[in-house]
Length: 241
Figure 1 (tube, rainbow, N blue to C red):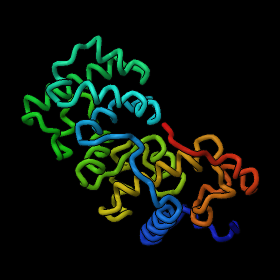
Figure 2 (figure 1 turned 120 degrees about the vertical axis):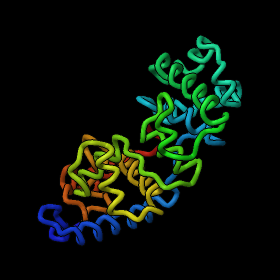
Figure 3 (figure 1 turned 180 degrees about the vertical axis):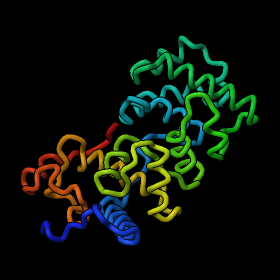
């Protein structure tokens, strides 16, 4: 991509930023037409549990554990009354298994007591559950309930700053800043697109700038190798963390 085509975030007007962000989102849509949540699940409860397990763990590892987990614990009542030692043993390989067990059992007990055994479909309710923050809540809302939500994980944070969409570092402020740029109906799938791009191409240490479809719109072009051959060697395939 010719360097002169780049749009710098410095001094960019609000209107120009909105237009650039939406154009980048459209390019990502073309690049990753199948972008989706890479955690395997069949219902809101399964996705909620899987997302809790995904903290500091790869989606691939979580997906190796959940078939056994979901076969044993089919309802929220099953989790609420789970034998702690048995649950810990099943999820041990996901890391931080004691804390995650505490969160899962506490979450399930709260759902039983407060919501009649049904995972709530509102952000303000989900974030009151043990082990559930805004990121986890938005994953569940967007992918299990069809409620638009922005998932601000580490990839999303890195890319939105590299793209010059925001200079914020607080996840909630990033969520609101990006939400003001992209139409609400796109929030969930846009999150997946950025996460996929961050896992596959715009990686932390050496982004593959030389083959990036966003190069002409990215103020961080040149952070990684711009030579197409060198950049191509950096591109990864999933599934990822």
